[in-house]
Length: 214
Length: 214
DNA sequence: CGAACACTTGACGCTCTTCAAACACGGTGG
DNA sequence: CCACCGTGTTTGAAGAGCGTCAAGTGTTCG
Image (cartoon, rainbow over the protein chains, first blue to last red):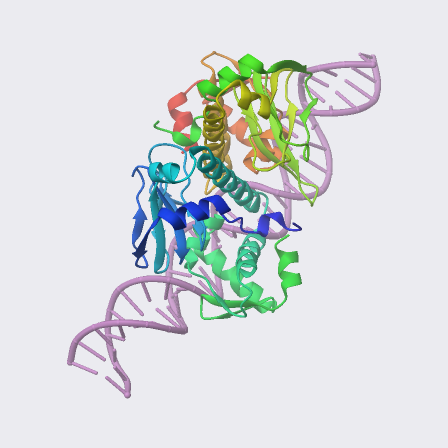
C-alpha cells in the first residue's frame, strides 16, 4: 500500500468471478472490435478472460475520453444507468464472458449477487478516484512514469508489452501524443526503462521509476 | 441533459432519503468542524439536511485532494472499504442526519436498502467521472466557467453564495489560487458574471458562460 | 484601529502544446 | 527482392498558458 495511486485495482470479487464463470457465455472479440457500444443497454455484464479492453466515450466536441483499461479478470463497464455511457473495445484479441444481470441474480441468491455488484462498483469508483489523483498536480513525466509503473506491477515478466498505442496513453493521461513520446524517450535516456520498439519495454531501475512517479 | 459535465448529480435516491429521514439522528456541525475523519470506519452514513460539506484526503507529499462538495440531500462519503479514505468537513454550519448501516438495513428490507446504496455509489461514480471530464483537456478559463455554471444550475436565485473559498476551488479544479482569481476577474471583465465580494455572484450571460465552459 | 487573513494583480519563467518534418515499421505489388 | 505507401511514432522549434514569487488590496475580527 505504499503507492496507492500506482496499483491497478482489479474490478472483481470472488462471488462475481464465480457467477461469471458459471453462467457467462464465452465470446471472442478480434482486436479493434467493439464489445459494447455507448447507449447500449447495461443488462449484459462482461468480464475479461484474456486480453485487454479499453472503454471510451465520445464528447460533443469530437474529443474522446478514455474511461479505463481492463485486463484478465476485470468486470468491464460497471455502470450507473440503464444504458452504457462508455463503449468498450478490444485492444487485443480478447476472450470475454458475457452474462445477463437477471440470470446472475437468479443463479445466486439475489442478495449475494447484488453485494458483489456493489463491491465491483466501489472498486470502479476507487479506480476512478485514483485516476483523478494521478492527473491532479502531476507533471507529464510523473504521469508517464506512474503509467508504466502500473503496468510493471501487473506482470513480473522481464519485457512486457503495452496493449495500447501512444494516442490511447496520451488520452488517458490528458497529454498530447508528442509529450508522451518525449517522456518515454526521456525515461529511456535516464536508463530507468528500456524500450524495444514502441510497445515492448522493461523496467531497469524500479526505485528511480517510483521516485519519478512521485 | 445538454451539458452532462456541468450538472451536479445528487447523491441520493428516494429509498435512501426515506431511510435516513426515518432513522437518522440529526446532528449539527459548526462551520469548519470535521464530520468524519480519514481512517474512521464507514459504518455510519451521513446525509446533508442543510449546509455544505467538502471531502478531502491528505496525500503523502502533503498535498490535499478534494473529493467533492456535497449539498442538501446528498449522502456524503459513500465509500469502498471499511474505513473512509476521505475526511468530511462542514464548509458552512451544517445539519446532518447520521445513521448506522446495520440499522438502515434492518429498518428496510435489506435488499431494498442495498439497492439504494448501490445506486448512490453509482451516482458517486458518475460524478467522479464527470469531475475527471471537467479537468481533462480543459483550460483554466473553461474549468472555472464550468464550476460557476454548476452552481448556477443548483439555485435559480439571482445572487448566490459560494460556500467555499478560492483555495478549495483551486484544489478542486487542479489550478492555483492565483489562476482561479485571474479567471474570475476575466469572466467579470467579459460581463459574463458579476461578483459582489469574493463569494456572492450572479450569472449575467448564461449562454456565454456555457460557451466558455466548452 | 490595527492585525490577520483571504483575495487580487503583476512580472517572469518553465512546461506543455502546436505545428512541422523526419523516421520506422509492415504490408502490397511490381 | 526491393520500391512504395500508409500508419504510428519520434524529434525539433516556437509560442501560449499556467505556475511561481512578490507585492498590493480588501475584509473580518479582536
